[in-house]
Length: 414
Figure 1 (cartoon, rainbow, N blue to C red):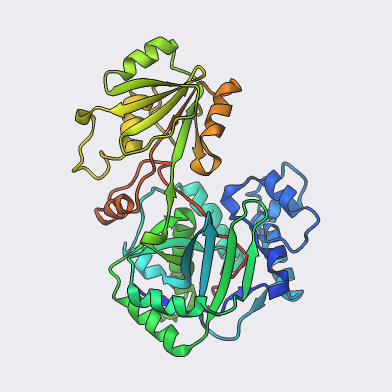
Figure 2: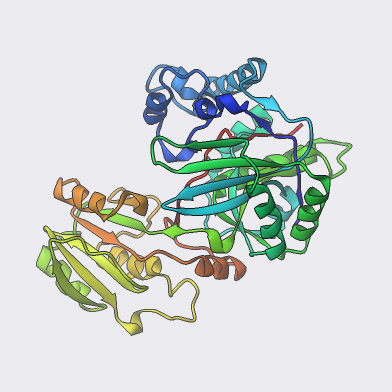
């Protein structure tokens, strides 16, 4: 895998907490407006610039993209973002619930993405790709990183460990979720060269989170190559910013479903239909969480139920068919509830496991939803097996926590 160091554009140490933000796609415009209130240095002014317009302004309006460029320029002019003088790698660590994961911030290769060496496990939507492409194009930069996994490598671990003993450049705890973020710089030329060399021998990188950002960054890089009559292949636009973590350090948590109605069935009829493919056990009013693969929890009518898929309903040798998201999508959502397309059906919504199963219960008890379905999370091994075999996971399968913070470092395409 081809990677390279880069001259990061980043906030001075004393401003990082004002600049940093959550990723653009985990909150809506009004939430961003509220989080950025009274803070002109918030990165939301660049990644969600609609907050600088009246509420209700279309975030895809050309003037909104132009505002992003204006704000990016302002941040640099005012010294809220400053370019490093040297090409280097960075170590970005996140600590959640006492567990720390250590990522390397690098520039990944557009060519590796286009040829499939950077492997994906989700389909992307063209409208979302185009939105991020416009943002990359107009700013001529990757403002936010993508999130990759790489096969564990002991020597890379050793280099990273050396830097984790140093005082961090940035060290803060995000107020919203209590997650600690630390950021260090790898300046030593020998370490930089060795990391580049070690990545060269890796068979693949895996997109964990940020499929749309990865596609957009690579497509813009490819576009720029086509527009440059003197293209050489070593220009900065041939690379895009990624934070790469060892696969075994990452945690995928459950990604659950809530549905508005029972497709005309009574509660009793729905539960009876479930018995065709599942062993159904009533668990009572206390929250029940799935403890293993092929076990689901259902919340309906004030009670939790355990659903265990019968052995004949899945094939352990089929990397997609064995997934609980496939089993539940086919045998419950499609066959019984008539939900054919998870991407477009308005009767279903998805809830990241970080919110807990109490959130599922709340949405049903409020009357907004009729049932909640909780799934056991996918493993990193399953994700890698699927990506390696060229398969695509069903929509809304993986939820990674913690999310990367944006604004710690930016990559210019110049």
